[in-house]
Each structure stands twice: as structure tokens, then as C-alpha cells.
Image (cartoon, rainbow, N blue to C red):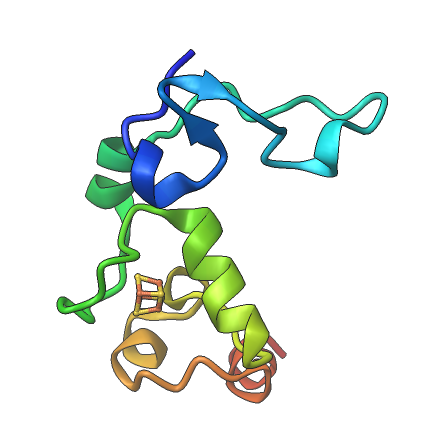
Length: 95
Ligand code: SF4
């Protein structure tokens, strides 16, 4: 299987999967078979257009989680447009 974003992905080299996306090859955890960049881009609800992580959900989650934030797609339309990706905002929206 190859990844359509091999360079950006970091989990594939020359179309060859070098490691599991999820679970690091742990027993019972299936590796992600391929990158769904184009499909992800179509359904991405994030309106922050300059972002080059759109469609690369694994990078999006990792980026925001480093700051203890969540991806825009987990918020309401209004919450997403506020660009406040904080856990506090997420909890307030989902009480
Ligand atoms: S949620 Fe953040 S990282 Fe993800 S596409 Fe939007 S701006 Fe980019």
C-alpha cells in the first residue's frame, strides 16, 4: 500500500509502510492501510484555509494536542469559526 502524502506522512518511504500509524505494531492493533488525504479534505470542516494540515488528520490531531487543543472538526460550526480549539471550549459546547 502506498500513501498519497508519503513526504508529509512520515510513516511511509518510497510507497512502503515503515511503521504502523497506530499502536506502533502492537499486537491486536491494525496499521492504517493508506492515507485518505483527498477524502479527508472533502469532509474537513475547518475553515482556517492557510493550514497545510487539512486532510492530514493525524498531523492535525498531533499539532493541536501538543497545545492541549482539539481539531476544528470536533466543534460546532460557530465554535470552529472562533478558532478557539481549547478543551475548555469543547467541554462548554458539549455539556
Ligand atoms: S483544525 Fe487546526 S490543524 Fe486541523 S486543519 Fe484546521 S487549522 Fe489545520
